Length: 73
Image (cartoon, rainbow, N blue to C red):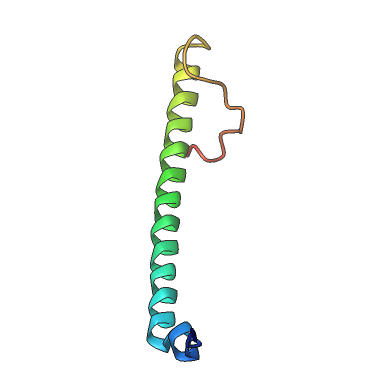
């Protein structure tokens, strides 16, 4: 029984497939980067709220400015 060898064209991806995968990867990285930036902003806002609460409650609630107050302006 003879097994026919695979044609190189079958194994090789076409250019448009490679371009499509690259574009898909770029879109995915863009979405992840955007979500990461939003999360960083949310955490900074929460940090500032907790530092403000710490000051207003004289240390009974919230948390101290362990990272400084330079971002809370």
